[in-house]
Amino acid sequence: MTDSPIKSPPDDIPEIPVEIVSEEEMALIEAAFSATRCSLPSSFISSAASSSSSHSRLSLVSSVSSITFHSKRRLSVCSEAHTVGDIEDSGRLGAAQKKSKVPQSLLDRFRRRKGLAITDLTASEWCEKQMEFSLLYGKPRRTKAMKAGSDRHAKLEEEVIKKVKVRVKAVEDAWGLKLMNFIVGSNQLLFEGLTRELPLVGLVDGVWMVGVIDEIRMPLTEEIRTPSLVDTKTRVQASLPSEPQRRNGRLQLMCYKYLWDNIVADSFPSDHFFDFFGLNPLHVLSEDIIEHAASSGFPVKTLEDLVTCFRNACCLMPSAHDQLLLRYELQEDHSLLGEDKFAYDSDWLKSQIQCCLEFWMGNREARYVPTEERWKCRYCKFASVCPTNASTNSMPS
Ligand code: SF4
Image (cartoon, rainbow, N blue to C red; front, side, top):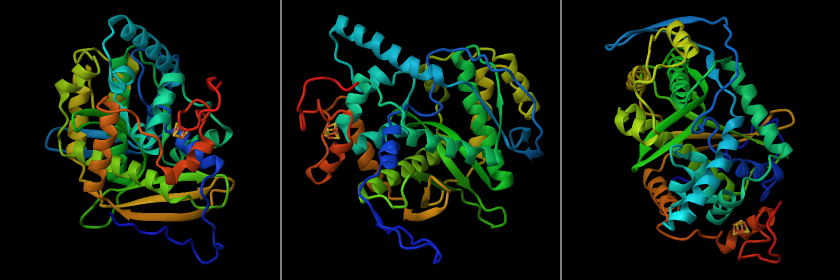
């Protein structure tokens, strides 16, 4: 892998020290334990009301269909149910496992019908044992810094997307929403050259993976238009992250590229998708979704219709650029602290994913952080019960 240093900030920004870890960075890592931002519970109902929005309308003619899209528009549902779903699912599955005495992998136990989030991969890369603890005992509470980071992402998203709440009645609707958001976002990218918070889902190395790309840029004027993936990390202090933190961020962006390239290559196995996530392809989507899809230019009735539109939208997109960009900005004023431009390293990424899947699939025990990265343990919520650091037997609250 090309180990490019973090690019220096512009001249008018003073030299910025590199620190090992900060509260906010730990928050970012801890945030990785939250399942993907748009991951779906097995079922839920949103009470959100729909509303209309002003938007520019763009036309796109493909070989498959003539589609008109609303740009600057993204649909959303309340996501609080997801946390509840996690806890309930883990309890139910844990009880079922005890009863049957059949050992289950963490993937089967905690990510069945949800898919593995890219943030699950990065959290495992940080410390597999910590990931395991968080699955078994619950995620760390959201800190102020984590909330500030999420708020910043929401703000960045609002700059290019107007959110519209829609009512969903079944898990099929919720998936439909995610696919619609991809279709709308990818067309915004095609016609405006920028989109943010784009949801992804794809089958990678035999595992369903989900994620949300912070930002994709695609120059409007160049002859060869290649999407560039960007991730923004916010920091509490005016310092740049340590190498393990940067490595973790690089892994995340490379995973997104891997997933993106996978789905735009039309390797989306629809039947497998319906089967794995327990979805009825013939489910008639909620009125809100049907209405919004029609007004966005792709009339659909069933989830299967929407999957077809999703695949068509994927086929219109090129593979992502090999150059990836991590931005570090100060939480306080959003000033740029530095940029990390690096090249996609397919071999390194595949070995990282393979290693991570061994752990998730139960082929081996969770690993602890290596000796040179034991400083991570000082910031770990599970340090008191971890065999590497155990000083008490009580579980963290
Ligand atoms: S104490 Fe250290 S090794 Fe143990 S789970 Fe936490 S970070 Fe990992």
